[in-house]
Image (cartoon, rainbow, N blue to C red; front, side, top):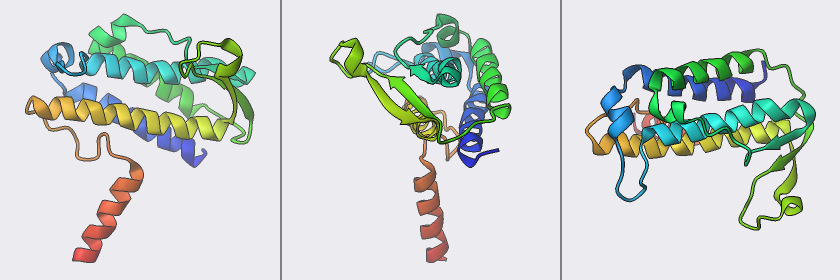
Length: 173
């Protein structure tokens, strides 16, 4: 298995682990006055990107704008967990050429169909998924901590930051 695929699986498993310990109250009712969102929408948005990837990479076109936006993921942590497990299973079976060229669509505000498609590679999109997911996990971690719930210390933290912290700790000892 390619390292970047394993990195995505590790990241997805963090989502499963969170859903196994977060209370329904936190999942459903946690919202931020500033963001207007809680955990569920961030989980859904993250999974939407993975589902878009899985539905498009084989034909070489990933449209991140055509996301499912399934409200059940936002409102039902058990359904969200099942979706994470489904994506993890698909990633476990992923046999890919990381250099495979892709076309990727993300509307950056122009709303012009032709300008929203960019060239990429499978590896780059797998790297994007990890980064995108970690950033949404970081927001979730902030929301949880504001309510007194402490997620795993590596939840929502970039791998390079984790490594940096470990190296500083090792140097200090």
